[in-house]
Amino acid sequence: MKKLLAGVLLSVSALTLAACGDEDSDKLVVGASNVPHAEILEQVVPILEEQGIELQIETYQDYVLPNKDLNNGDLDANYFQHAPYLESQMNDFDYDFVNAGGIHIEPIGLYSQKYDSIEELPEGATILMSNSVADHGRVLAMLEAEGLITLAEGIDKTKAEIDDIIDNPKNLEFDPNYEAALMVQLYENNEGDALLINSNYAIDAGLNPLEDAIAIEDSESPYVNLVAVNAGDEKDERIKALVEALQSEEIQDFILEEWGGAVVPVK
Image 1 (cartoon, helix red, strand yellow):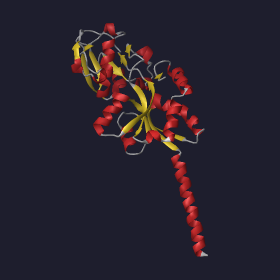
Image 2 (tube, rainbow, N blue to C red):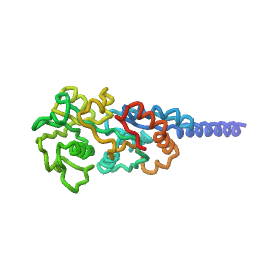
Image 3 (cartoon, rainbow, N blue to C red):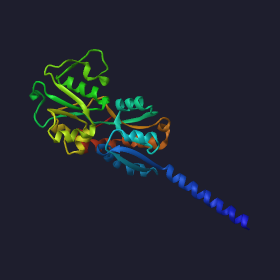
Image 4 (cartoon, helix red, strand yellow):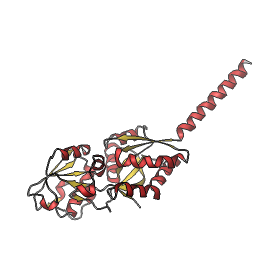
């Protein structure tokens, strides 16, 4: 009788553990920047819920920890970065990540408290940039498109550096030594003559990139924000469902309506 009872209890325990495992396997933990990524993910929660997937959103204020936490297994995926940044992080830290799908573009903008247009920027104006090297090519390509500088021919502009500038008619001074998350604070403190600010930080601070920036990146930018996962996890049905939901017409319409072109969904 004791053996029978023990067997029953063991079976119940095994079933209980199995049930817990199933419950955990239906949870999807995704790291994201506050704006717009986490707000977009909030719209996806009910879509995934209908498929039996519980989406748990973990928010971050920086660009370093989301990849560290993905690498160590605290996250199933993250959604905050563009492809060149992902590539640079993988090279720098030997991460084994893959791009599970592109979702949207956040055009980077040039902001100034002192001048209302790029034409007003004076000789020798100081331009503050983040120390995110992966964004330098993006910034310089935008400034070239605005006619402020010329980059060397034949270079990969996504990897351009300040040393690649061959013509600088206004003798602009570039200061690329600040954390990306601090750029809004520097703008509010009236630092520099103009600053480059990523749209997620600008929007989070109440700025409207389309109205407040004195120059803004073209919406055809190659810097698509994506869902990153550990290699192999892109085959996980939960990840496939997440990307499919984020790329759905419903979410694309939400992005366009919510941010009016300051955030552009990938078609």
